[in-house]
Image 1 (cartoon, rainbow, N blue to C red):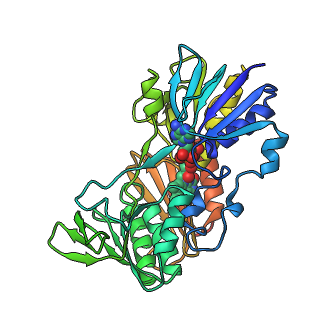
Image 2 (image 1 turned 60 degrees about the horizontal axis):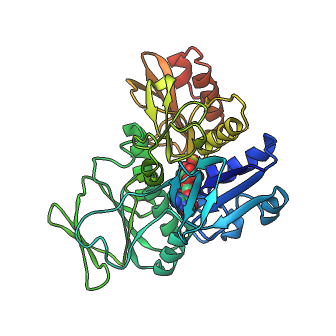
Length: 398
Ligand code: FAD
């Protein structure tokens, strides 16, 4: 009897376990996670779950029955070490668990704010259901939340906290929200809809210190201004959990390095999800994707690899974000674009698409409340269909 151990029980880990059974792995599967809940959907944490519209049970990726029926043994534990020479993992309680195949699906953790006062009570991060439970306790209607970071997590959190009746200020260090990931027109749209909902957005706002007696009360900015705060939520990006892999001698470079079959630099170890980085031929470099669809795809490929089958990571990256009643769907990656084409008017309309091109080739599209454009873009980008700017800018979906 062989055993596959999967470290990390979230999107990648849960999918990998399920896919192993689909690939006819009939031996043991042990899925080890250090969060006490059953594997759950993470994206709703900053959306419906924070806005109090769902329960943790609603978020379960699979029912408890599923794991029992599929003979997937769930173990709530922290893996402290991978001993490759001995072929086992060591748990927090010292137990050693042998493996024949190992999958690292350790995900990522929030990047910490390093300013003075960042460790005061009332300062939160948002990565887990436990984080949200803490934020929900602190988030009473009428109180003032300061969100550090105007990326997707920060903006989704702002929308959810407004729905809960809080006053919200978003502090963004750069000149516009979503600067790292979208074109100026898309940033301007999200800036506008948040302001219309009463969010105070401050750009070029560098946090210098947090202060308060025992609990955060103020956020001091580099320009000398102080902003009162009852709670602070930090959303300034994530860092991959690569410590286990690095300590085990695997190749790590801003992520556990995998090939297009999800194999790490060790023959019997695969990795998938936010913790993994792989070379994407289309973009000519290694990229670490942070999204549920890519965690799922990499996990399926990793399961096939464990079962000795040849499958490759090839799907086009895509992503989504929900803010108020707006749905943003993103197809492809826009890095390196040299031109944008707009369909619709983001300064007026509630729906539009921003197409990103490089040397005339469609690279990516941000589709706001335009699901048909999203479907078209996914196909056009993946198949490298010829692009016609006039058609792209035409208000009628192609
Ligand atoms: P993770 O979900 O990070 O899971 C890794 C798991 O491994 C964690 O439970 C961790 O505790 C556990 N672990 C780590 N080390 C160990 C260890 N040594 N021992 C045991 N367990 C360990 N993506 C989208 O596509 N769309 C969205 O709208 C979206 N919204 C998001 C909103 C929020 C608030 C957050 C936080 C993320 C969002 N994402 C979204 C990103 C998405 O959730 C991640 O891409 C996805 O969770 C990656 O899954 P994963 O399994 O690779 O890693």
